[in-house]
Each structure stands twice: as C-alpha cells, then as structure tokens.
Image 1: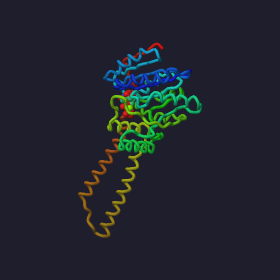
Image 2: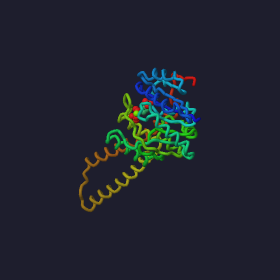
Image 3: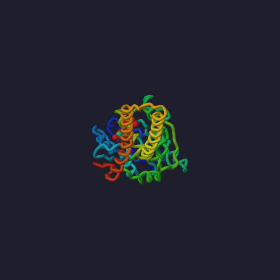
Image 4: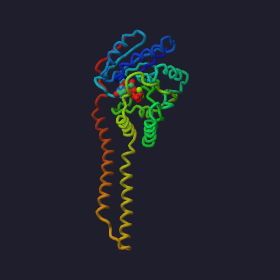
Length: 313
Ligand code: UDP
Ligand code: MG
C-alpha cells in the first residue's frame, strides 16, 4: 500500500477544513492501493480554524498531523514546513478551501503509479474563473517572468501538485528564505505532467490575495529567479550616453552651420528630471536585490511552530 501525504495550508479556513477532511476520507476510505496522511498547517489563523483542526485530529480514519504556526508566515513557508513533515511515497500540495477538491488527487496518484518516468503531476487552470482583467494581468506576469528569468513557468500552473520522494527532497534542499514555490518547482526540474482542471468556487471565506499582494509576489518571483533587471541599468546607461552624444552633435551642427541658439533652461530641466528618474529607478532595482541578500544573510527560520498535534494512527 502506498502512502499519500497531503499538505494543506490553512489560514482562516474555519468553514472549510471539515469539508476538506470529509472529502479526503470519502475518497480514500475503501481504497486498497493508497492510504493518506493529512498534514494541516495552521498559518497563524485568528478564527476558529485551529479548534476545528484539533477536532479533526481525533479521528481514527487516517493519520492526521496539525502544525500551528506562531503567526502568519505565508503559504510558501507553510509548504516548506509541510514538506519536512511528509513521510508518504507521494506528497501533494492542496488548498484547504475546496477549490482543489481532494478527490482529484486520486488521478494524480494513478498517473504516478502508471508512468514510472513521471516524477510530478501538476494541475493547471484550463479556464480561469477570475475576472478578465485579473487573468490578463496574470498572463502578462507569466510572459514577463519567462522572458526575464532563468526558469520557465507554465501559464496557469497551480501549486496543486503531487510528486515523488525525489522531488520532495530536491525541494527541501533549497533552503532559501524568500521562497517562490512556482519558480522552485521549475528550478529543480524533474519530469512533470500537466493536467487541465477548472477550480471550484471557494466553499467558505475569502481569498487571501489582493492586487498589492499579487504585485509583491510577482516581484518576488522575478528577483528570486533572475538577475536580468540588474543588467537593465547598464543598458539604460549605455543607451542614454549614445543618445546624449547624438544630441550634442546635432546642437553643435546647428550652432556652427546654421548659427541657431540653443534653448538652455527647458532642455536642462527636462534632462535633469529624466536622468534623476532613471537613476532612482536603477537604484531601486539594486535596492531590491540588496534587501534580498540582507534577508537571506540573517538566516532566520522560515517558520516557527507553536503547537503540534498528531493522532496515533
Ligand atoms: N494560505 C496560507 N497562508 C496565507 C495565505 C493563504 O496558508 O498567508 C492558504 C489558504 O488558507 C488556502 C491556500 O493557502 O488554503 C490558498 O489561498 P487562497 O485561497 O487565499 O488563494 P487563491 O486560491 O485565491 O489563489
Ligand atoms: Mg483559494
């Protein structure tokens, strides 16, 4: 019998965790091929999620582990903690909000069983359920990211993935603090199969994303997996030097051959503003990288566990 470890991040999911648990149990109850281990990670929820998880952990149906963080560390830290706890032959990352129904994991496991050459099975959103504007923004992010970075991200690929032990160990070997899981998956490589799916509507509660968080997440992805923005400063500098050389030539020709005066004040004011802006922009990019170095060198833990509960299955 193979064991599937399900890593379930929970941040204020009081209305969903029980539904999730019931669907997972229903799917695997009489299954002769697989048993499941549920790893719920409470990411500093301030609603009743932890109490709901305590109740779930009393079950005798399957192994349940609950890790409760001391505060909200974010989904990327949750995934890392979950990977460290997972003991299954296959590990799956799956949201608690029922957008990714647990019964879909069965198909992933069957693919891993049938195809020995496949190491990871990933669901991607065939049809996005969010607004047109949001899917346009996300689409352009994937394009920019793929152009700028050294990793290749598949459009719409989610964190809803199941993989073998070798992939889990590779993911754990990357111990960086600023974790951009989509990039990390692509960076470690391995043979991945993509399956289309349409996410369900959230059963209860709200999405934790807003435009600002998405922007920060996108920046994180680019900075963590590419140094190309740093080179932008060099190219901009070079480009502007050539441009100013041409401008100087034009001004000189006008002065010598046509005898036309040079409009001084507006030209200088414009150039100062333009150059000041570009310099600040480049400094900002460098600053982003220095901030990342600063955070990494502090070597703080990726998460802190306040409480650990486990049933004796
Ligand atoms: N989540 C988390 N920590 C956070 C934000 C989200 O553990 O800081 C969990 C959340 O409980 C859910 C999953 O990550 O199980 C996905 O979050 P959400 O549904 O908000 O994202 P969306 O589906 O809208 O992309
Ligand atoms: Mg969701």
